[in-house]
Length: 437
Image (cartoon, rainbow, N blue to C red; front, side):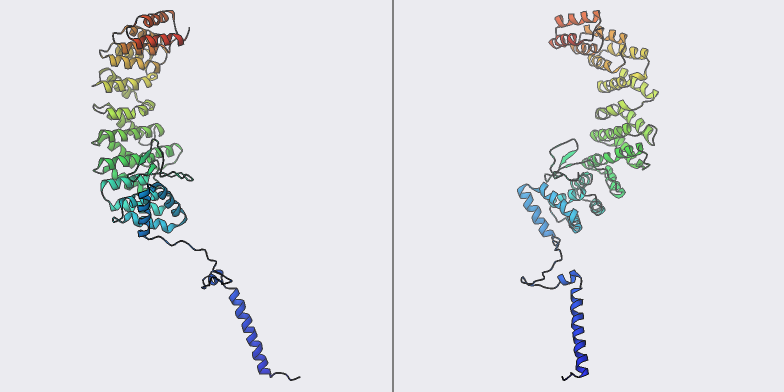
């Protein structure tokens, strides 16, 4: 048998080894490299790399907005955009571009703002901060503030279409969102806090509305031992309460401070200053709205002896009915701070006042005071008051006392002979439910 020449044999072996090595290297390539090769529909090895949707252009997003606006589906679109942000971070940047582009429609910028506001994401926060710094008309700044304060409950599909609630606001484009977020980012919080000085009252109102949750949260944190200090924010609320030109905004700031006062530990930093400012401002004439919004907080606060005496004087000799009625109700809540004799003297003075509305208010507060037979006798004497509203209040107050024989007789007489049907009806009802000694 003829053997091939050695050179040819060696060359053949070398070619076979080279082919084998090339084949092995090909099939050991990374999958992404294989997948990147162009394939035809009939290719036995199609590309396997997951395909991501390209980032939509601003024109495409504008078309989505216009279509949703025509069909009244902006809340649904906002929810879809929020979900896209959570799965594609580049979409956050697309919304940021819309937010900062003043040529975009107001609807597009508003939806972008509230979607970004619903995200717990530093990049979204930065976009909103840039938009605040960019400035604009008052209505736009207000929209940005509300977007920053809007909250999102994970797993809910109705974040932008809530039906109602104490903190739900409706935006110009028809979104319904809840304002209750604690603003954790210092830069964003500082930007909104700066808006408390804005010349437009609705911007200031939005800032107060949004920041109150951060203010009260600070009190809760301090109660739990967290030493985070937001004193400048608290001071800003005090300044709004004292100096804002709008009655309603002074009342709004005072209401938030009253909530903070109830929540913050007594003796904590700023507690005394807030209480003193709140108390003295409420005593001023013309502050009816402030008194109404802060009353519950002051009822729960620990008032000093000098403050209680100031309230007593306001109740007896206040400038107007509103101030006196507020003081009487506040004293009723703090009745245990006075001796029994002091309470009797005060009630006796109030029930002899020339204004029947003041006498009525005093009787309505009897139920807040510790039970006292002499106070009961003062109320029973008011059953003969010439003003029927005072007699009615006296019957209501006496319903909380034990039904002694003389009290039962007095109510029976009233149920038969009082000229006012409302008084007769209440006397009859009270006799049926009166506590028996």
